[in-house]
Amino acid sequence: MKKINGLKRKVIGLVTVFCVCSSGLAQLTIEDCYAKARANYPLINQYGLIERAKDFNLSNAGKAYLPQVQLSAKASYQSDVTEIPFDFSKLGIPDMSVPHLSNDQYGATVDVSQTVWDGGTVRAKRESIRAKSEVEQKELDVSLYAVNERINQLFFGILLCDALMEQNRLYQDELQRNYEKISSYIKNGVANQADLDAVKVEQLKAKQALTQVVHNRKAFVEMMSAFVGEKFDENIILQKPEISLSPFSELRRPELELFDNQYKTLDAARNEINASLMPKFGLFLIGGYGKPGLNMLENKFSAYYVGGIRLSWNIGSFYTKKNSLSLIESNRNTVKIQRETFVFNTLLNKTGEENEIAKYRELLQSDDEIIALRNSVKRSAEAKLAGGTLNAIDLMREITAEQLAKQDKIVHEIKLTQAIYNLKFITNN
Image (cartoon, rainbow, N blue to C red; front, side, top):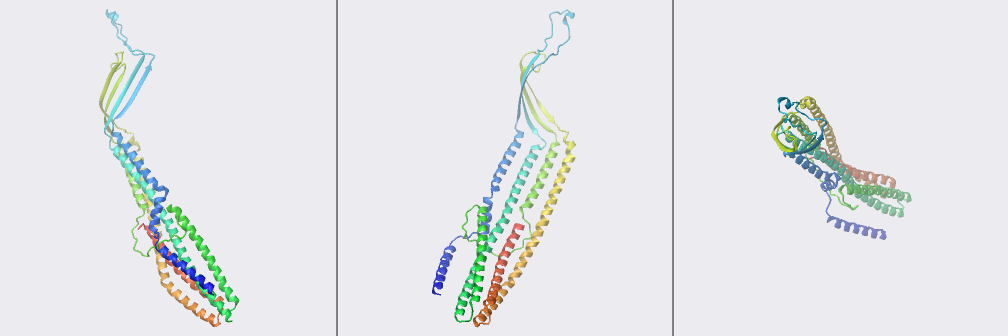
């Protein structure tokens, strides 16, 4: 007995030192885990790539208003050339003739064009680029937001393991006290070795249960470490969130913003179609050097230029307008259906989680009473064992029943908090 008491004092001293030391450590909150996991997730780097791609595309679209320069050159040889079939000798002018072009011809030109009005094509294209970039960013938001759900599972899994481990230690302490009591009862002839063995069996079962919980916690911590990108100690302390619930009536999920931006993309596509139907005006200047020049009757190298105003109108765009707009409307209806389906399923999940919260709140209202009653029954059983009217097996049954009642309360508290955070995830509030 003295050795056991001395060992217990040492254990209590070590636990006290651990508590004092751990009290000074910063506790990790679930919000910290959200932020760390988001920063560590590989997709986070894609935000910068999307922004850079958008800037490049906008810059390229804006360059349509810069002067467009086209260089061209050619050299050719033709088997025949145009000649004036007129014989001046018949008119009494034998020495007169009309020169003709040579069979080999050469030319080089520089064509400079400047858009004056493009019918809104550039503006519509820039609008489309911005809308598509927003869609890509919102798709990333959706992917990153899904990480929060995994963090919820891991975080509350660790908290549940912590609570069960603490309760298991208290349970083992109680079993040890009963083991010592029954040992003294055996000496007084009130109990026998079978009673002591019954307690020993429960002690071994409690140690097995603790081993399972410890390994589960270790797995949760390792997965959490992988998500947040930090190596956590196995004994890391998590801060249990406060149990508070405010009405989450409004859905603020990033998926809704994604659907809205998909609508904007379709609107931008419609504007591009409308812009393609408009005529385009511009200025042009062509400068060249070749043989022949603009004077086709002069068979020598010469420089020349041509300038003016150019009108272009692609009438063929009217042929596909109806089908293109119908396709956009079809895509809009598809997005609408996807949005309605998402809202419907999300509201169903919201209702289910609200019922879970109500269930655990109601269960917690009777947990304390059940524990108190189980404790009363256990104390009565302990008194009967001390009086020799009850065996240890029956006492262990009552102790186990009290332990299960306490575990139920622990599970209900953690599950209630987890359900609240699940509801926060569902509504993004």
